Length: 427
Image (cartoon, rainbow, N blue to C red; front, side, top):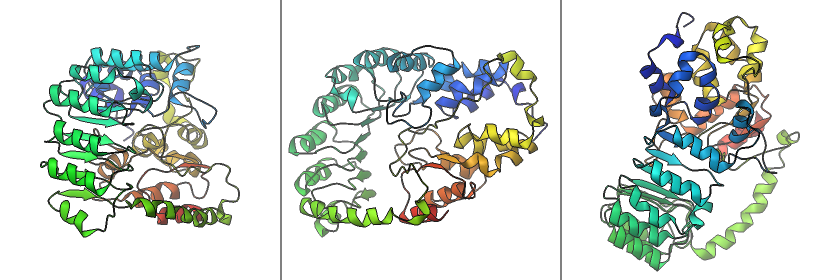
């Protein structure tokens, strides 16, 4: 591995690889390695899939360095708004962006810009705050290639899907989380999206009557997720019979409305669980999923006093292991696991040092599902290490185990079971 000359690869090959590493690495790490990597990072094909962290701007709740902070520090920018940053990133795709997940904090101006600059969009995810704008339905017509849409709110929902039915002939997938699906919304789905194949209404409010409207009206459904919803009994034979023809039907965790309020009693049991002595020294425990949408928070590691040409002359493989370990502890989980170890022997050895694994920030989603575009962390891990199958639980345990009890900050991904949390309490 030490003999590889990564900087000598053809630009198109490099661009193909860099299009998969994630926005933060592509913007703040890759360009500073050498000239050829910098040139390749500017290729529009690297920027076709733009998955912004949910939050890119620091506030009083922030722990760690967020993407916008790193960007301003790395590029010596005194101030940069969320709007300006999003426009800068979207502009790098030169109209080639096909997948876009927007962060919170964008204004109406940004969504107008995207409508003009991203005509090739296939997948789009809009956060709650941008959906407050009534302009969204008027822009749908500019994305005629749109196939799947994720909405952080049901605001303007009926108007949006009405425009989709008129303008997006290939549309097949809709995700609407934590929304109230009344008779008007259910009927609108059937009227405007009768041929929809994939529908996620997880965590919302929908009763059995409105579930019937959707299932009977959308005959082409192959995937329906109404898990963790309030309004129907998932064990009711009528529900199971109703959805028996749907290839994948998820309703786990859903409950009748009266059962929902009784379930608050479980909170006391959970608070007792948190009193485990194993966590007595922990100051910050994050049980929610990582709000960084597939990206990693990382501390800047580039030497600000050196330019890109000087970077090419550095002999990183000759640094002492403790020095390397100090640096690698800041590059982000995916790079540390799947990039760093394959550069040379010394980097591999340094990447095994427990001090590299003190800060474990998992992506929100690490496992692919039907809504996934691109290669997620668990897919890359299984492919790189030639593993046929690996569960979320097994992967999280493997990563936590690398810290050998030294982990001080942990953001867990979605999909973990109680067994993992118990393991973390002990480890």
